[in-house]
Amino acid sequence: MSRKPMVRPGGRSARVQQAVHTAVRELQAEVGRAELTIPLLAARAGVTPSTIYRRWGDLQELLSDVAVEHLRPDTLPEDRGRLLDDLQSWAEQFLEEMATPAGRAYIRDALLGDPDGDNAGQCSDYAAGQIGTMLARAAERGEDAPDAETVLDRVVAPMMYRILFRPDGLTPAYARRLAQEAVEGFGAAR
Image (tube, rainbow, N blue to C red):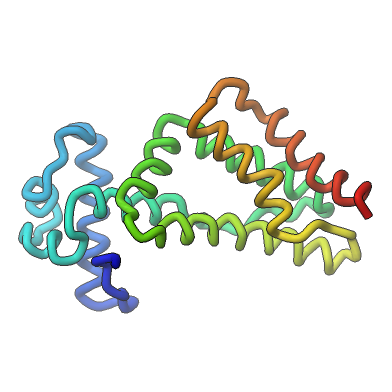
């Protein structure tokens, strides 16, 4: 079971989380990930080490929490007027962000500090939400479209596999091709 309690918006808990997350990002940039320790992070965040241990359990769970927060999209996918264009643009951006060394590190951290699978599910929900937005727009325009699971399986899953295990050949053209195959393959299958 995860040690992370439910967080109320605002209040001390939110301030502590923000301070600790900021400390992680700043210290990673300053001293590198390998040098991070709970006492060092606590000092930077202005909290006691026991606060961090109580909330996150260990450094890996903290890094995982920071990674999940970083992986959360902060904007809706761009509306380009057609599902294929929307999905290709989104897939390119997703690949561009996740295929960087920093993106791969965040993905690994999100998964490594996740003994119960909650973070993986949360990251999957982020992608599914973005895809759902694009599919809802397509439906409003009267376009035929695959369902979200099909897009996840045909676009996101292959990109994630390649990002983590075979990062060669990860180009915008690859992302566009996956999106095109998902949209056009759906139409051909009907």
